[in-house]
Image (cartoon, rainbow, N blue to C red; front, side, top):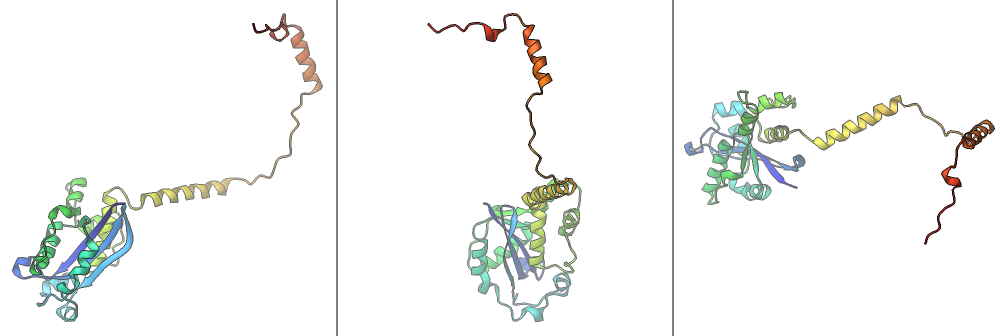
Length: 233
């Protein structure tokens, strides 16, 4: 079955060319359109200060991140997890720029943009003129946002995985169908009256029925069953 990796990052700012770095990566494995439970998640020391405006978005402070691993210590594990599979990303250009900037700094090849499936583009095509933010799509699909008080890479990747399934036509379709069948069966059993085994019935014709049948036959002229059968040559 097809494996995809839903990916999200948090950063110190908006542009890696201005020296901004990744501070968190969250990846969620999706196989056949369903989350498997396998994830990759790490906080990263950006080796710089976290600006206040970035802290207000994700809540990750310089103090919190200072003892976390740097990207070079997690890159092998990250690349092993994403393997060569498609990457599902909301506003893919942003995250791919940061990931490729980090990879380039370590001498790795950039990830090709062709690997990225941008859910913003899918949403805008499917719902033209409607908001395409992750929050807006979660609300559209009635996906619980109660735990999202701030942006977080792993939480946002998990929410995006559910949004992606909905954009493709619905989460866990087979499970929903099974549940519907189970509910139907339950409803049917609730209204059905249990029945015990029936006594065997005698279907032999009554005497008056036999007499009526004989009377009818007596009125037939030259019935076929009384004609002599032809012998084969």
